[in-house]
Length: 475
Image 1: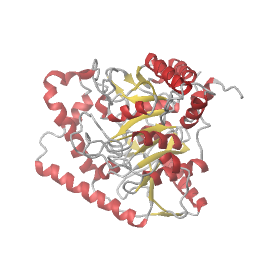
Image 2 (image 1 turned 90 degrees about the vertical axis):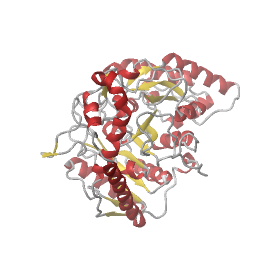
Image 3 (image 1 turned 90 degrees about the horizontal axis):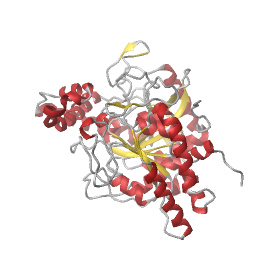
Image 4 (image 1 turned 45 degrees about the vertical axis):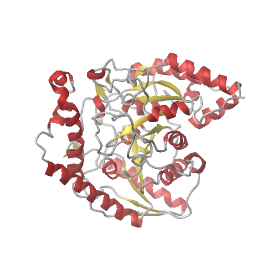
């Protein structure tokens, strides 16, 4: 056996780590220790992990190796190091939600997804950084500070799973659990140059949760360096749970067993504006067009499509910020001055919304769904850019301009949140690099309940245009 260097071990695919752990060619303890060493070196620079759990990780890795030696039952993720976003409940582990309100909160239960990851045998490396209560498209808070993009340290890794995206990009663990209420998995995947998938609403149960009160647009999912790793992680987490009324019935398919399959015929439509987006960075546009055309290699049909989508921002804004205001209003008397001022400003923008305005937003949400429904009557897959620009400067809530044109707060992310409103599965996959050497992401959207096809198309693209040989550099 050729001895691997430490960096190569850190960037091993999770599915390969699992195979080596099962044969003890590499032990979980060896892998975990090498990754911990890398976290200790790089995390002070990028601030991806906010609460490391290294002693817990060592204990879990030791138990994983013992189970292998004892011939015990091994889970899908047996011995594989994994990070958890700091918005998920983790039993006995500090969980702050990026907020001073919860600075010392230690949950007495695990999130369902976390529990399933543990049951699958993963090793918990720690919690990754997030903006306060997950509200922003960049990652910063008053408890842990700001996370940085590993490709360019003056840029954001995105949000709200910015810590998770940055960690995976740097080899600080092959698997990261995130959640996505408007792009919070796909944005960091795009800006950090990794793969991330928001599964169909309800595929992975969401419980317990804060801030989002029954609006049904938040999904849990993985960020990884390899599509097969995402399939493996979803297999471990998916399935119904009575605590989440949106959770879906069990599927009779394992993603990891079928992800390599390529459909014989496929009709792919792509859009650079979804019928409403105002402006897109020219480098992003070129990368996505060049990339989507490569699917023709498989004999698949690729067509540019025209579509109309009216007022998705109005619907999203109304529902999203109303959720935050409903949650925060009772806490303002004690905590208002200690909350992120931009979060307060956003939440209070919903003051005065009438029931009629909320119903109008819900009605518009249905119209947005019908627009996407019409697309999938003709096409099997919809492709768009993930974000309208590569990573923007640290310290900004959103870039004020794109290509010299003023944009709204959602002008940089017009392609993501509509699919939170509709619930469709959507993934971001690296598809190119800007002139500043920043990653560019392409979004792959599937019809309802069809994560399998999204994963298969993603894997097919990964084979045409792999990205994993390029790694961030740290002195």
